[in-house]
Length: 299
Image (cartoon, rainbow, N blue to C red):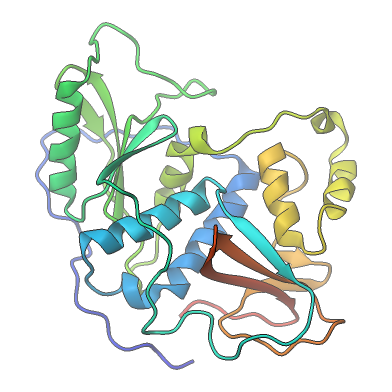
């Protein structure tokens, strides 16, 4: 596979000064959601690597951040194509820019967490400090917790290349995790860490719809059968399974075939497997899946 060209050299480690001990939350992510969202996020990173691997401005950061948050909260649509002719070429060109709208501010609320969007971690920490000082956090009340009883993050600093979680312990006081590497556009230098993706999925859980259904009481084999009737392709069924808390882990397979990321449009006959394309409203995300006998690996 031909490479897209060398990246602009970027620091792998964020530069910031902090004398506070790192917060080490006990992050618990549902296995079903983890298997689905981690793959979506890694594939989004791969498709737009020509942007991630270079320098970009604050508007582009907010564009990328919005897509990352939408994927982690399952806020997207899947369009299915069962055959026929279509465009030619690649799904994401090296000169292409994302078409969806950015977040409108550098600090946005996503569920119960405030997402702070700054490329410099130190600047993001300063914004968190100012925000904590302006809020009425009491040092006598217990920190908010998740459904599993773990301390809930109040803030997520998302520089795109790194992610850091923070929670307020009182007026002018907060703790934060160590920065974890997220998306830098080059898997050879430093792929996103599993912990970074877990932070992203865990911190935004309150913004992800969770629909209670009596179907959860059925045997998991029966749940899988029900999900198989939801759509032609397996990607839609996997998303619904995450929203409803139903079914087995999605193994990114359709029968004996592996569901793989497609980089190019294919000429497909009516009998070929379904093509599943992720959209953000009216805009393509660049992520397209097709069940095939062979699949690519990341560079």
